[in-house]
Length: 82
Image: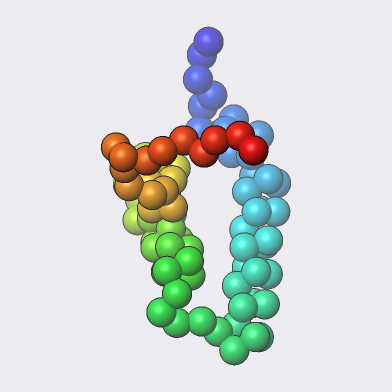
């Protein structure tokens, strides 16, 4: 399978990316109207992820996913069915 050219990828994904950015902006606006939040790791993760989007480096999705993931715990026990 041949990868898309940059122009094809942009053509294919532009409206979806625009929609998701507008959704994120609306979420951040609601948080701000509610008085804002500081010192919360969730908003810190969102702000860090926005910086990743803008830094021009590769593997953005991987780096953002890692930011939202918990560290591996070898002693983690799988939940048991009820």
